[in-house]
Image 1 (cartoon, rainbow, N blue to C red):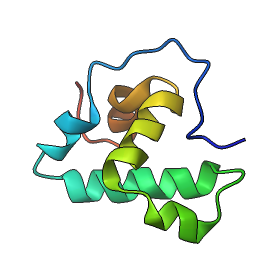
Image 2 (image 1 turned 135 degrees about the vertical axis):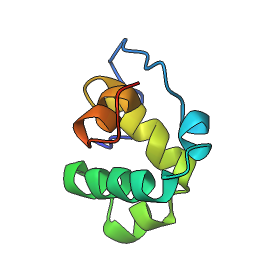
Image 3 (image 1 turned 90 degrees about the vertical axis):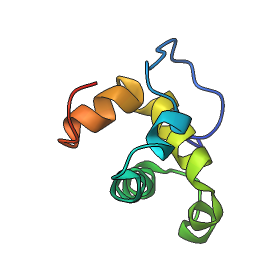
Image 4 (image 1 turned 90 degrees about the horizontal axis):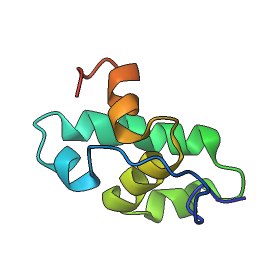
Length: 81
């Protein structure tokens, strides 16, 4: 199952991909998010994941990471949000 298909999660993060794009450390966050997608993808090939734009990667993390982008940033030691 693709992590980019519709999620069954009802969780809504207080952070959006647009919020991440405004952060000065966004390149590091996006690389970490992309690495997480590579590690947790079941159907996408690496070259397909590489073709995804940053917003798609961040939307997938927000939708499928337990706690959304907010928890992803906390777990990655990017601060509390």
